[in-house]
Image 1 (cartoon, helix red, strand yellow):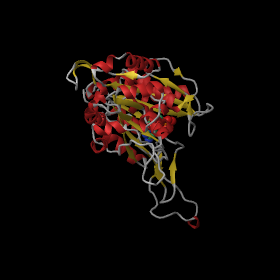
Image 2: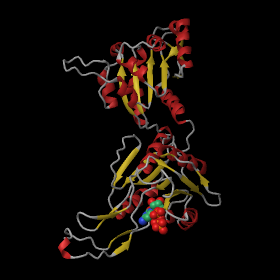
Image 3: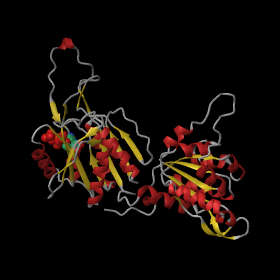
Length: 408
Ligand code: CTP
């Protein structure tokens, strides 16, 4: 299996709310926005009013491709306001860079006199600050105390570094370089995920096999499990190709490219095109096993009598992908059984030559189609089955990716 490249290994795929406060280091914020965008993040910049004196909102808006926000209230007579609670909930992480002595003091006191402070007070996600100030300010006991207080409350810090300062003094107080901030963010969010930078193909949802222009054969599936896996894989830094059958789910996480398909043949074609470039393939889709040999070109009318449907098998996409896989690629399948689950699951694992089979039994309460929970058993070659309790689909997704990481 290919090792992630240095570029790919910095994939972050997070929604970053970047707070820029008013210090000379704000000129580096432009580069920071670029680095974050390059790492696959969506960046929403919130500036304090003082930051406008150091860097223009236009620069940061252009680089982040989003309007920069500063005010709690939009003073155009419209009565609109920037919803700090929504912004804070949108963000996966808050980064304050530069964090001036004034901003750190505000944070330590829980003051809330501008939009950035309101966002910080509303945030439940991790917060990373990159302090930047002159040497004497940095050494001030008041500043040291503020920072200690913030660290005690779980705020993460990066820098400052030592060097020449804007005042001409030499010492500690320089904001960390943008690449160092991205690296610190990476360590904070990713830990040591082995999926970081890996390419993963995930199929999800059902397929529809046309009988006529209005009717089709399908399987019961909402796609929730596949979408939860895609989301979690992207959060771990994977570059995800999501091939989705007809589902009503949305995905807006950076790092996921979605291809929508309808039939098993379309799903097979999309998966076969994408699979050769992947490190891991996970087939969660409930692909229809049979399709009408001939779809009627016009709607079949009741008056035409009872239609006779001649069916033909669809391609077993998982089996094809598994047997034609490039060296080192991991292939994971799902199985839904209604009886003799372990026996049938084990047979599928061997027949399709899988590295991991995730077995669902529809006999289990709260598991299977439509539910937000699932109860699965992992089957691996030469290993005893591992039965998991009933969990949310997000937790099952984490458990599956944990196993995949172990196997990498
Ligand atoms: N699958 C596939 N292509 C198909 C049918 C299934 O890729 N035409 C994949 C599913 O995405 C899943 C796995 O195969 O990962 C198991 O699907 P399942 O329907 O449980 O098994 P089948 O191989 O169809 O076997 P059976 O009908 O005997 O249960």
